[in-house]
Each structure stands twice: as structure tokens, then as C-alpha cells.
Image 1 (cartoon, rainbow, N blue to C red):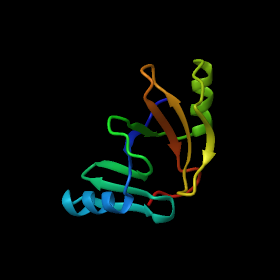
Image 2 (cartoon, one colour):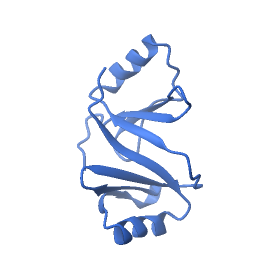
Image 3 (cartoon, helix red, strand yellow):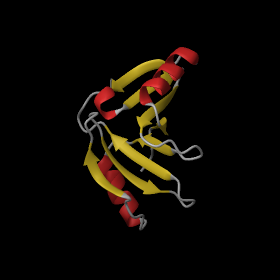
Length: 120
């Protein structure tokens, strides 16, 4: 298995609308994908992207998210190494499929593919 790219870094924010406005207006980041009902925003700054997810903010925590070509193949590869899934392969309302594991230090690592959907 080889990851294609670091797609985005996700942080949880307490006031989603305020955070979206702050990153968009204060830092000039370009909104790429906004799902207000799920309080999810993906913003771009050059080649880098930041995801904002509404919830309880926990500064110092983060999730690394990597796009893969084939999520089932990635899950099978992880299983051969004895890596336990923190969350099973699942489809999201935003149009992607993902699974979550922990790295050796306990950081959340999400692997995803678009599951036949096209990127925004």
C-alpha cells in the first residue's frame, strides 16, 4: 500500500460558523467543501487543506487524513500487519468512505477514498 497524498488535517471547533468565517476571512483560505448540516468544512490554502468539524474543541489533538486508491485493499494491508481498526470502513454523508486507526503514538490516522464519488 502507498498513500497518494496527505489530503487534509482536521481540527474540531466549538463554534463551526465562527471558525469557518475566521479561516476564510482572516486567513483568506478558499472554501472547497461546506456541509453545514454536518458542520464540516474543507478549506484550501495553496496545496494544503484544513478540515473544520463542529464539536468540542480540544487544542493539541488532531487527525491525519490520507487519500488511498482502494480502501478495501488498504484495510486488508493493515490487517496483515495486525493493525486494529478504531472505526470500521464506513460511508460518509460527505461522499467518501473511511476508516480510522491509531499510529504508534496514539494519533488518529484516517484513510479514505471517494468510493466512486467525485471530489469537489
